[in-house]
Image (cartoon, rainbow, N blue to C red):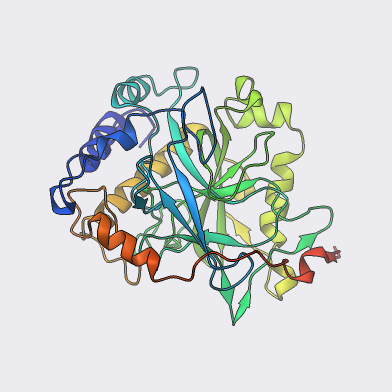
Length: 351
């Protein structure tokens, strides 16, 4: 399936799924989709930001959580309540009909989990109600990505596309592997260093097919539409032209980033070659459909929490009071503590 055919139907489906939330206390839900070009906790075009975040616990500690709020100050799930498609429905339909290279762009929302040059492995907590961002913990220790020369931390703004899910029950025909049970990952390559929890509107450029410990783990390459470089970078070939060496560094980073932890190098689909925008949009389309099945209890998500307040057709939809009670059960905000000393270490890997 190529990009273009099917996108109009999918966009209409996404729009319909977000409308009307009678089970959640008759709260209006279309506002989230009707205010384009509002990013994270920032000001843009003189209008107040659409989303904000609230810290609970202490940064660089196991109890740290970053919860999300909409423009009304109501708690939401970044995984389920922030729409995949940015902009009003009219703009989405136009984009879908012209979804060819050189036509108007499909603009998507991205949630920043790890700002560029940082090391803490922050991620959407898919197995917690309302899915706040937290720092990953493995074997009782907070996880930090190693600095492998010449790289420092993450070399892009790293995050995820909301309302997507790499289904662990689906075997991908391209990779021969099952999904990794997470939202699809994004590497945002613009010139700006973004903030933890920022919601950035991005356009898709291409995709890298990582095979991480035997699972399909797609990496979408994208750029923020508000970034000055987005005026010249429109597809994966433009990245090669205007940012020489960046794609090669991306492959190298994903290949070896777990080696300092004693794990083998990762492998890639398509002989480590990047796929184009059309292929990437097809993959995003399929993961959005898998999410739609998940949020409507038509697919087994296991331990994944689908609590939301805006997807009115979902059996997991809750009211605002329930959402607030979830947040109030977590520790209040505390002064941040320093990251572990290990983030300053350098690793030099032999050939």
